[in-house]
Image (cartoon, rainbow, N blue to C red; front, top):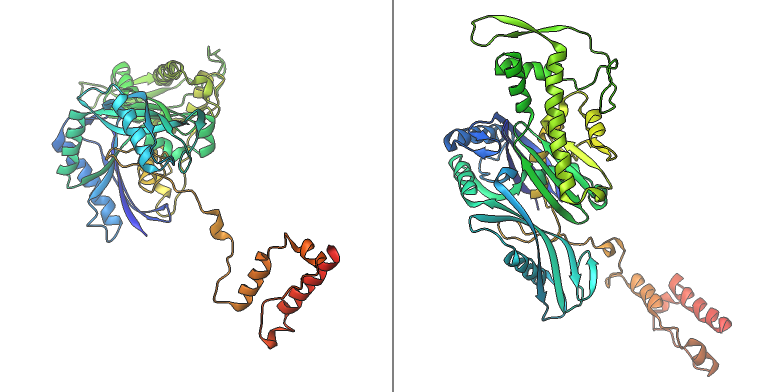
Length: 479
């Protein structure tokens, strides 16, 4: 059955809406809409009217591209980590029917939420189980169908401030959209860029956007840690504008055009990074407060400002990873995503700063349709929302609407050919395969005469008839 999904990423620099048709669990992108973010600062709604207009414009553009989707009015929405607080909890359920089903797992998850200390002003948006225990058996990956009396679940719970969520809902509704689900932005990004092997080995996914920086750590079955701080590429722009005494728009152009984080090979870097030689040159920027006046600043000065802010950001991230207590479990290292990853030399700088931890720039999971224009790491969150709607989420997760997701195990027997009762030839062959020969030797030694099933005269000389007589004679010789 085909379903249509609308995902809306509400970022500080842009609003992005993607419409996709899901077939057999795979999204096919049919519409993309983008609009400059308004009424959003550091992931929070600060002006409902402006934000709703930006969202409405992005959705309208996506619908124009995706024909026949005018009636689509429910969306999966990203929520910034600025709204959220996370905690770990566990819950126990005493099984009465002796076999574990979705009802028993749901009861255990609800008890984990009940046992957690969640402030009244916060709502639960994700309950992500990362470990199960059944009776005395630890490290149960999937308890479904197992037999036991005491089921215990350990979960990572993500909560969001109720008032902030209400403002987000009002903004979305004012844009003419109903909320189908709410997904933490860093979680959505990780869905789009992490492989199953990376998740099992343990990996940190860091999403650096315009005004926000979000980190989540995946270990084993689910997310184990997430955090947020309000720093992004826009802060580099602000630093440049203030230090170079120029306009914000000019500072943004300097960042995009000259944002090279490589280091002069003639200078010794404390981080041990060697880059190409940057020739001493000056760049022209407009002056602030003086009409049409310009001045010149050294390019090396602009490069130093950009690098200093990036190093500071990565330093904060490194401390978050350290404080998570999961640094030693990052077998797959760190995956970087977000719009800031387009800056030249950022991968080499990150590798130098995250010492001894493998680091790579993300590549989103490819999908059919209008995917090419979304390859940029800046679109990992909205692609993750679409994948989430298609069912790519944590097994037994409880979402923002209280629904529990269960990934059905693939039926490996479905590919095995079966014999139908309509075919007489197949039926007779199946009778041969199903024959019980366990007492054949004893019966033969006692002179028991075996009578083969009656068949039509025309079948006596058939291939199957000969096969039956051959098997009987072979059994006599064998025993």
